Image 1 (cartoon, rainbow, N blue to C red):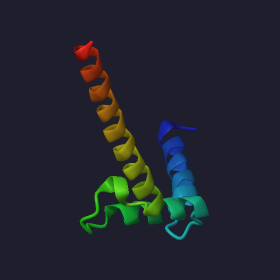
Image 2: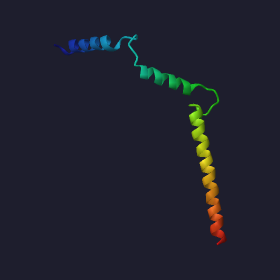
Image 3: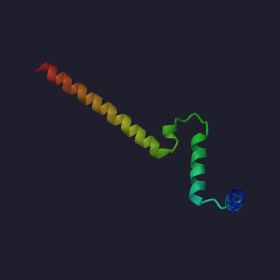
Length: 83
């Protein structure tokens, strides 16, 4: 076969396998696309809180632990300075 005929055969194979727009979409991919759409909506909610209650809980727990840690560190520094 000539190179041109091989190229035509490869092109035909490509069209046959990948040229259909009505191909089956894996359900996991559809779920991923739905999640991406949810995160792309401009509703004023920061991206780190878009998942709902779970994200709010994690964010608030992190904030609380951070404030607690800073307070405890300051208390320790003050106690060390007084000694």
